[in-house]
Image (cartoon, rainbow, N blue to C red):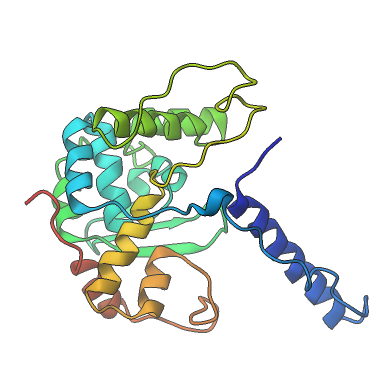
Length: 246
């Protein structure tokens, strides 16, 4: 079974932390993972941000639910699986905040709602049940499979319709797209919206530490356990994102 380099690197990071704690506690003398280097990306290719023109093309080609997911991805910088699982209980329009815990790291996120995203949220159909998902089809897909594979394929097909990717043909399992075959890495995917949000805020002059707090990246520069980022500063950062609908 083949996995993405980022998955391998995350595992190395977790093991390094475990052995570091064991060494600190005197259980072992040396950390055997300290010398393990991170895995480089396949073929030297890494994800890149979407341009604003590309996002507009995606929005034009998308159905209403995917259009909503793209806007949430752009204005929050969060992962597809976490956005698919959002319910109305995660949305506080009175405080203009989105609150949830990430599925990958368990990090508790409080993200101010950007004005363009708020206008979009106010147009979404909402019932009386706060457990109702914002994106019913995506929610059902990710909850059933407990992974975003189907949603990722759907997004690739959307990129193809928008002219941003080459449509894939159905292939046997021994071919490149098969479960046991070599995995093709695209330089753009839904994850690229995280790169887009990051780039747009940094280009607007927002400090790296503030951007990392909003996006949810753990780093030496900022730690949720020790550093509090003022909510006003975060709102200013989110407000720097452009209104992609104009």
